Image 1 (cartoon, rainbow, N blue to C red):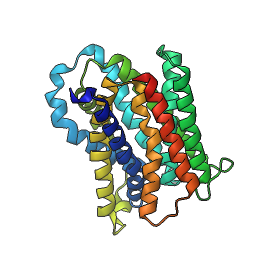
Image 2: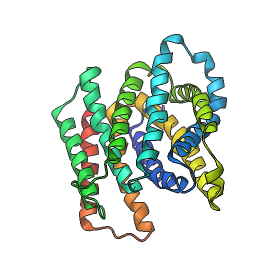
Image 3: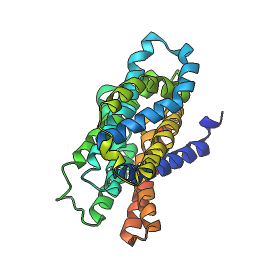
Image 4: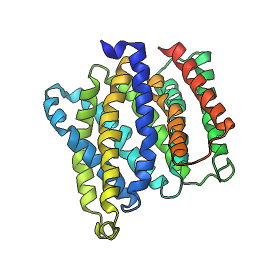
Length: 292
């Protein structure tokens, strides 16, 4: 099966990094017209709506014992982090949000060790530390950003990565008997109604006052359909056939694409930033050399 092939797994890993590395710019664009709560709710509503036909098709696979795990996969894997990220990006740059997301594998490993009896080798720990060091170095090199003046709103991103780490361990330990499509579609089925109800309680009058709101909505639509629905299908499949740490190591590669978008936008990229990318990739290599 293609999902079991090593090269395909790395292809999906880098594809996810590209998609999620671009998602922060899409969030930033959407927030120009929509409030942070509206942006998150629109994202979830569109993602769950697109997945609804697949959800209905997979209802026959829904069992009572899987409901708690699917609820966790839905709310911890997408719903809650979506609101935390948009809230954080009202006060921090999108590039910094992408960089801080590199904490996900660290929390995945720690949660796995503390609550799921996950086994960890010394080389895996070294890889995680190298990847995290590269990500922290990237943050410190960002324009106007240093470890001493990070906005407190960045803590919302840290909380989101902790929730991601818990979610990945749950999916890996409780839901691997389901396919990635089944996990994603059934978990998002539980999100549609809460997201719709919440969205309908918000005020859309300020949104329509912005002349560019159709473009900003298009950005959120791309975020919901590609950056959430499609990407979660891929990640849950990746978790099923690899390991929790491997799947979340995508977070180490995301800053690379975030910086690449900056280059296309005319930003200067230093040799030190390129060195950071190398450290991050070395960390990912060491992690997966042991765990897969």
